[in-house]
Image 1 (tube, rainbow, N blue to C red):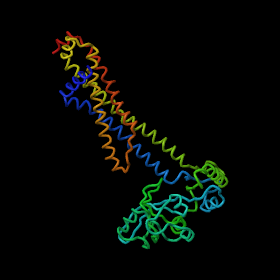
Image 2: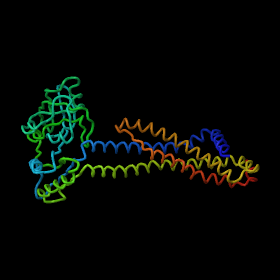
Image 3: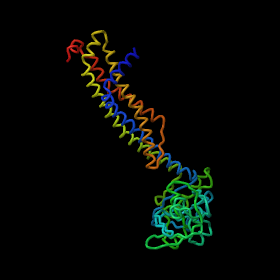
Image 4: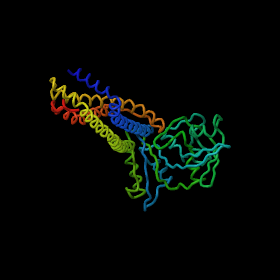
Length: 393
């Protein structure tokens, strides 16, 4: 009986191919939109998480505000490092944008004022040359380490080591000798390593910009087991200097990940709900098409009832058609959702991540909508009076 009902439903749907296609279109678009939004949202979330985790679980990001009791300086950070028991690396975090030129080649990109601790925290490694060391930092030397993309844009196939580039910023320029090229790395936290120029912090401070006040810095605990002790130690030093616990905020990796999870979770739910609205619109479309089908097949329903079909048989027949439409649309929507997610991901540089539970839920939701919006037409069809149905023209 089930096979015959399925066979009859398929016959009816294939008899009106264009109508069936238009009925499915809303569900296809709805499922596709949900898959695209959630997979790209998942991909962006995992990308950010990987960037945070890439610098280690024992790194803190510290933001500092001006206090009426004073400001934090580079000397204060050096003092903290000398006196700390649980911290190994502390570095101010300062970045800017400038134009870098080599002969006729030019690139506008980010530069970081870095010290050796900054290099250690981010685990930067060179492909050629060397990294910024204590001698560069202490002497305020006019040197730079460049990312792989910067090297390609300024030098092409030429070896940059020992060459001089010029940094132009705020109507001033600074010549810099290239001492190293970094391995192709990608992004780490807020830093696009490949597209960045690293200059000794002291060089930027002495020759370009006044950086006596520290607004943010990075600190690294000796190990992941000492994170809590290191955080308490940082809080003690900062409070003793600034005398105001509201003047600073220490963010550990776990706290960063929790914040990312909360933000992206809410964003995914919101965007997923918006995309799911198109599923409801598709369901309404299916109900309207099924009602039209009931009207067109009134005489057929009357004949079936006259030869013994029950109300349940008629209702199940129309519900079967509705479910076939929505489940088929759900499968097509999933396939196109996966294809378009990968296509869009290439343009926005996000690798989509497909969670099986979300894909299955989208498919089940499509089926539920088919069942929900198919009930009314099915009930209407089952309650037709066979005598009136037979007279219907």
